[in-house]
Amino acid sequence: VADPKKISDSTVRRLSHYLRLLSAVQAEGVATVSSEELARWGGTTAAQVRKDLSVFGSFGKRGMGYDVVQLAGELRGILGLDREWGVALIGAGRLGLALLSYPSFRERGFHIRAVFDTDPAKIDSVREGVRVRRLDDLERVIAAGGIDIAVLAVPAAEAQAILQRLAGAGVRAVLNFAPVTLEPPPGVQVRHVDMALELEGLSFSLVQGRLGGDDSRPVSSAR
Amino acid sequence: VADPKKISDSTVRRLSHYLRLLSAVQAEGVATVSSEELARWGGTTAAQVRKDLSVFGSFGKRGMGYDVVQLAGELRGILGLDREWGVALIGAGRLGLALLSYPSFRERGFHIRAVFDTDPAKIDSVREGVRVRRLDDLERVIAAGGIDIAVLAVPAAEAQAILQRLAGAGVRAVLNFAPVTLEPPPGVQVRHVDMALELEGLSFSLVQGRLGGDDSRPVSSAR
DNA sequence: CGATGTGAACGCGTTCACAGCG
DNA sequence: CGCTGTGAACGCGTTCACATCG
Picture 1 (cartoon, each protein chain N blue to C red):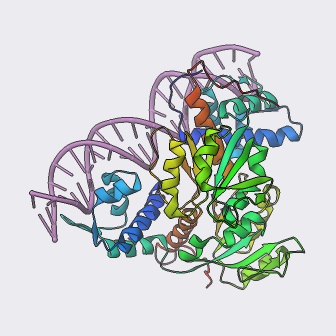
Picture 2 (cartoon, chains in turn blue, purple, green, brown; picture 1 turned 30 degrees about the horizontal axis):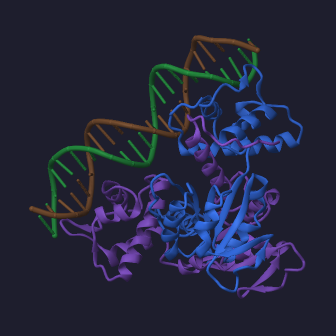
Picture 3 (cartoon, chains in turn brown, orange, red, blue; picture 1 turned 60 degrees about the horizontal axis):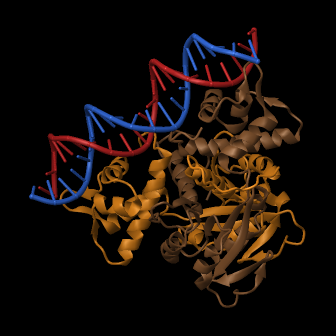
């Protein structure tokens, strides 16, 4: 089980998806699903579903499909969602505060236990039950334990420096919302959520869809 | 130039990255960059940079590299960032309001021109200079023009229905923040920003990194 | 039988290596 | 000579097809 096989990023993403779908159908009282059904709901293929799951074991019953409750449990274990994770939020700006009250985090076991900012007006104020601390205290608070993951919601210019401090303090997983490419310190997993980048991708597809010259698509574009 | 070649999603992402880096070094007065430099700053390889660019043309000077200003202009054109895009924001909750005041959007030419919500307390209030409208007016406002892209910041349960309405109203590009898999209506580009999913990916890597050892954390699992 | 689990085939994005041009 | 542009080789994730077992 603890094999050193490389799990692709997209596989992990799909596992999360499957778990979500399972939770949904479980709420409807469904007891069993086939790879076919999981695929349809999740926007992939049945073979893909089975391949993804087969990496971690054999959870299905041939001729039957997968037991919803059991598979959900397996996935939670695989993804590490059978525990609670302590999260530190860096940056109590609008985005940071929105994340602080984002329900899906707590629902899935991610508890924001510390919030940091540099704005004196915010320090020591309490948001969503968490006291905002001065950024200077970062190392001390993390050293006290209970923090597994850091969420970076700071201006782009400051992100790299703070990432370095986080790494030094022993944080090994960071979710970055700043629109910059960060150099990940060794041993630290960094993931990016870049909303502007996604919009640019949409912009691209809109422009491309309009290329191809003459009568490609008779879609009237406004403006 | 307007060839029907398929551009991979990751290529488009990297193009956005390159443009960002170019803007940064341009501000520092650098006139020329090599693919090598772009690669180092962007976390890829020089060959990758050249491949990405070669799809759209030959922008470099052999033995010299790329002219920063010129390449930035080309990329802006390719990505459709040489114009302004009208954006409709659906959902004026905390996340929606955070997005509304997110500076990177306006900086890159994405103007939020309409905000919708269902909460009577919010309707007709003005946030960041934009009046919040009732969701019922969605079709009418979009029909009036000036909206190219929609940003979905609504509860998961409502997202699919609103996506359908957006498609019906003629919107062809949607950025979804709701943590659900949406069925994209034909002709509509849907991109997802799923913050909980990213956290789960970090959770996975933390758990995996801990495997193979016997001194793992004695965390009690509930549920 | 029916749907899983999986080795083999496939397609595609990435990397390599070098020809080509300023 | 230096760095770009690009065909060829490579690796990897996805898809196919079928043997397997409840």
